[in-house]
Amino acid sequence: MKAKEEKNNIQCIHERKDGNTSYLLHPEDNDLFVRTGRQVIASCQLGISLELWLNELSSMMKAVHDWANVHAGHVRACYCAPQGTSVVFFFAPKSEQFDFDLADELAAFNLELLRTYNVGMAEMRQIPWSEFDRFVNPTAATNRLIYGEQLKPLEAVDA
Image 1 (tube, one colour):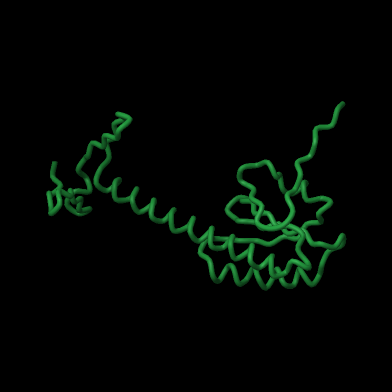
Image 2 (cartoon, helix red, strand yellow; image 1 turned 90 degrees about the vertical axis):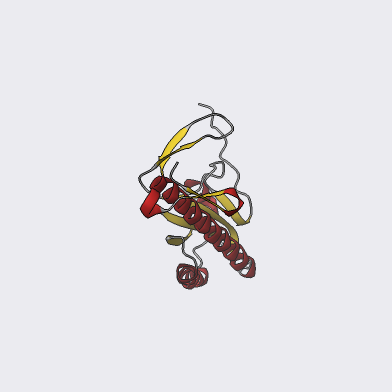
């Protein structure tokens, strides 16, 4: 193995020197992986990037929850659902009609989120509560209640 042994028995992989060297990785489950030094480094960088993105997303969801809580007089519920490459927040107003004041507030808040959090595209949509299930499936693992009432799944209709 070309990797140098350093203090505390740590193996060091230098991309320039060890990037093309193959390494055998042997986890506890006895699966064996052969990766180059460059692949090991890229995997670590991806893991760090993913962790940072997930932290940003979690922070953004907390900010949306807090915002909805402050605007509780207008917001009945908020769900988050991925759609393509966007994170979409679906808001149900407390009123039965489209809430123009809420729409203005959501537009300003959406801009604030895009400037504050590095998660890619985030969108805000106002959906009537009576038709919420057309846009959000509450049982889908990818959809998450952020604030307010739990949407009840549609019951099967007997034919």
